[in-house]
Amino acid sequence: MPTTPIRRSRPLRALLGLATAALLLLAVEGLARAGMGSPPDPPGLWQRWDSQRPSFEQVEGTVVARYQDRSEPVSFAAQAIPGLPRVVFLGGSSMHGGSRIATDLELPAAAARTLAERGVAIEALNLGNPGLDSHDIRQLALEALSFGPELLVIYTGHNDLGNTLQEQRYGSFGGAVQVRLRLLLWRSRAYLLLRDLVSPRAGESGDGRRRPQPGEPDLPISDGQRLLAAEALQRNLVAITQQAAKRGVQTVLVTPISNWLMCRPIGRGCPEARAIIDLETYGSRPVPHDQLPALERALQAHPDCAELLHARGRLRSNDGDPRAADDLRRALATDPSPMRADATMTDAVRAAAREGGATLLDLEALTLESYSVPPQAWFVDCLHFSPEGHGTVGAMIADTVQAGLALP
Image (cartoon, rainbow, N blue to C red; front, side):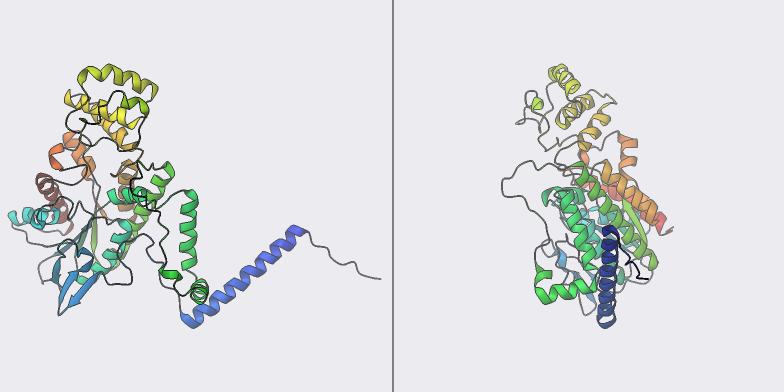
């Protein structure tokens, strides 16, 4: 009796084909790893510092932070002095260079000076540099751990958001997916081998960033971009904390703060704001008080307009109205083109501290508890500290450092 051939449905044949292809790919990957070893970690697609060059150069026992070559690179002994706790400070221009003041007035020096006044000595290494975000700091922290610090202090968040905007790191959800697929491919030894065979210089090509053209105004940022930037910030900080813990090094994460009063939102806002706000004089004085009724009417129609919220917040602040802080916070959160860390980024730092087991210095919460809004005198612009700001915040950091190192 003749047998009837088994007929497989098209979906089943497709699944079998996919399974076979997957097994072949896994086999090729396994052979490639057996012959060449596991692939290196994916490169930092966003970092400015050339990952092929060492960030630190060591010559005869002295280390120079080469990535600081445009801002008086710090040099220090490769070996920490016995009995003198070495504390590494990492961050962007708020940590070093942005205030255009002497290094011995910046946050790390201010923290060390505060501790010295209490009879406590530390070696404070200021390894910050303008423009660095958490992607860069992650690489630098891993390298800095080899120099024997007892504590890492990290102040970041502004640049993660600002670089997402300026460099269009996540130009769209499609762009974000493309970045993540590329990172996934970089974890495949077979892909790297094929890439080098097809195009030996492919790995040296552009990093996928879209830079705005000269004069391109008011690039807006989407809610999706904010969330992706915050997710990356949290992931990077957790990785730093966990790597530091493996070496017995503690990490302090500091929530970023900025000047809420001086700096209006820089995005397009809403057209109605232009009829009320004189942009020529806005930076030097607030909206005239007799414009408050017009502001109130405009906000009823546009309750999420960042410029209107900020203008009313400044007026309320001048009047001592406690509602000013809420207006200014909402203005920052709805800024179409934010260059300062907002609540999304600040919360990411807090979440990273919880997840990674780091010590959290909640600078924003402490500041708002004491002052309602960050004092304008602490800043020279929208986010860089004045000498007073460096001194005051440095003293707050000193308290956390002293507690973290269990110093007397």
